Image (tube, helix red, strand yellow):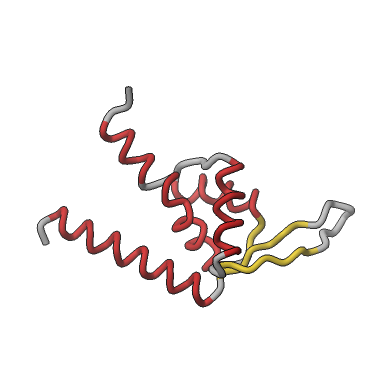
Length: 109
């Protein structure tokens, strides 16, 4: 049985993975595996590989990111790079604003 804190951590990490992905893509285009590693480095949790791909696919389908295959150098396989769209940037801003408002309410501000 999980504790309330464990459930909270899960809800605001894995269940809103899209926020973390959009935030990182705001910096620059990245490929899926790179995003997974950056999430671990920047936010301190490691999403499941399948989850990252599912979220990226849905973000692309809904128009929040675009994807483009790029040839790699040194004989490595091509990679699919994801880029934030203007709609994705708006969604990120709205998501962050919602979280900030919610935190302010929780703090009694």
